[in-house]
Amino acid sequence: MSTDTKTALLDAAEELFAEQGFAATSMRELTQRAAANIAAVNYHFGSKADLAKEVLRRRIEPINRERARRLDALPDEAPARDVLRAFLEPVFSGGACESDGSVHGFCRVVGRLNVEQPPFLREFFAEQFRGLAHRFTRRLADCAPHLPPETLWWRLHFVVGALAHTLMNAHLIASIREAEGVVVPHDAATIAGELIAFATGGVLAPEPHPLDPEATK
Amino acid sequence: MSTDTKTALLDAAEELFAEQGFAATSMRELTQRAAANIAAVNYHFGSKADLAKEVLRRRIEPINRERARRLDALPDEAPARDVLRAFLEPVFSGGACESDGSVHGFCRVVGRLNVEQPPFLREFFAEQFRGLAHRFTRRLADCAPHLPPETLWWRLHFVVGALAHTLMNAHLIASIREAEGVVVPHDAATIAGELIAFATGGVLAPEPHPLDPEATK
DNA sequence: GTCTATAGGTGGATAGAC
DNA sequence: GTCTATCCACCTATAGAC
Image (tube, rainbow over the protein chains, first blue to last red):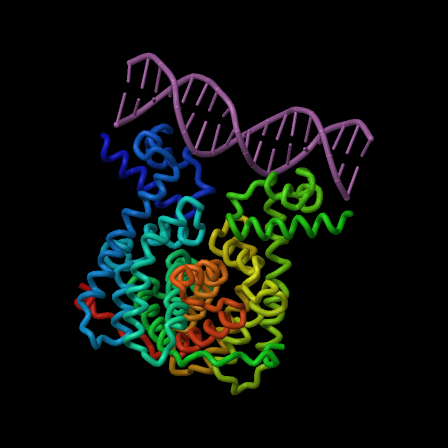
């Protein structure tokens, strides 16, 4: 069946790119996991690179639409925490989780390819995020008029970094502690809550002091 | 000369792994940039994987030693901000910068390989960071006794994520704004200052509320 | 220590039958 | 749409001369 093969390829690519990255995943491995023929990727997508773009588009576009929708729905006087919820929660909702609530592979693929950044994806990511990042930064500026715009710009990117790292490593982070007998809940709702609290505190922090170079020694 | 070739290989690998990742970088490209012979990597390091470990060890070990040293040097009543400075500043100091002050490639390689995580590096990273992460988390618990240990554990990892993402993308983040005519300083001291302020605010944020699932809609 | 040459394998992509 | 067979460029690693 045609449509099912295409979806199976997207699913398999999503898992493998998330686990291993783009460059380290071969077409043979990928088509085998999808129970498809070795030639199926080129038939359906044209190339490995175009497959990767589709893998990302399938997840990012709905998330960014939802982010924009929620940002627009906010009242003018909404606090920073609500702006950050509009940015972060869409990532974790809407199927972002396994049945046990843990973070799903498709979140990890975004995190991983976002950092691996193969050359052909650079422009793709820039397109997907540029406009949105500016809108959120402007909105945060309304919430925190005491902070310079460049500081808010950095802070939004710090939030993105925390998010990407968490999506990729949530299981690992939890398992280190669990090996010591500490139970660390890592369902999507818990992680989202932790991240939103952290991001709000970080974004609203007082303006940075200039560093004292002597104290660095 | 023997020693120089070895160093040239480490330098070239550092740059290329930082830009492209481990899997996407070939030995040919790497030895060519180092002006060395194609066989030099195997002679000096044994394999591509062992070269990557050396690339990381050269940077991470001094940084983590300095982190531990500064943590030990802190007075008992040191505030969270000082604990986070002990964690973050060693990354940016001691040659972490270009002559113009921007973030050096060798920071980026740590960020990138940290997220690419080829299988043979998983255990290496775990060894390098496990003990240190626990020591910093315990220390932060003293600064913020109102927060549960799991929350602090998550928050330290959010900080790591923000750090890794920033190391890899500082130039990119700045250049997006600069294309619009906004000057964004991205020298190492500025970035470190921004990150420390953000991290302090995030780590000390109030405990997360349980999320209201309805408000997510 | 450095080089050339090459082994031995895998990569992405395609041609053409069905 | 799916398959087999195959091309050929590229990969890591090594053998052996210098």
